[in-house]
Length: 276
Image (cartoon, rainbow, N blue to C red; front, side, top):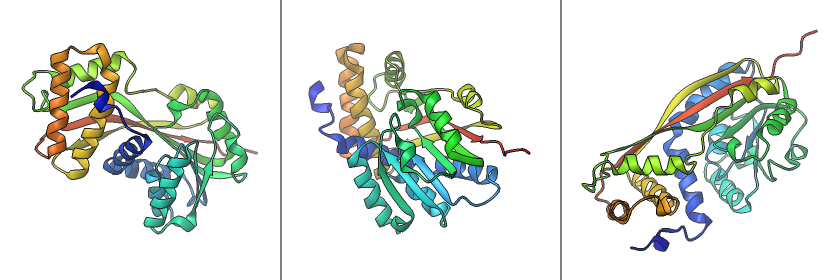
């Protein structure tokens, strides 16, 4: 199979991958919402989902905080279409308002004046000027309001390590080559959150996993390797690339037993209450 055959045909595959990442990472989202709920002194009425993507986070927020209005911001009309469909399917569309806006642009103008909870899951690293965005979020939040940031960490492992191909250490080689090319994108936002004025800023570790034992897990792994295959480029020799192809074929036919685990970091940052 050639390199070009693995290139994503259109944005629908990326949207599906992001959707599956959020669904399979439901425990991470739940833990982050638990932390946000504990940090908030009252139930949130107004929530903003920054870089909402396909809407899995938006739906989770709307379900968890059922009396809140969730303002979902994304720069992709296609993503927002999927978000609207997901909100309708989940029966929460009346509590969700989608906004087509760029986080590097005038997104704040789309929102009410006072936000209780801001949510940025795997989106902050895409922003051109994160420090500016964090200051904007700080001022958009009401005193006592909370910002939740979720990002990947650099810890990714495959089991079995050969991805079922008998090519020893294949998974480790994939991780190393991708890391050398800056994937996955990781960041530590603790200092930036402190600098923006948030206090306290709490960080915790969480884990994400997907297994080919389930249909959704198998599809997630197939799509992940599809994107990784493009990124690997000339960073691997032909034998290793052929082994990646073989792993993808096994996933596609439903005979794989591969699993992947990776880390997530969750920050919960509070805008301090105004003191007299």
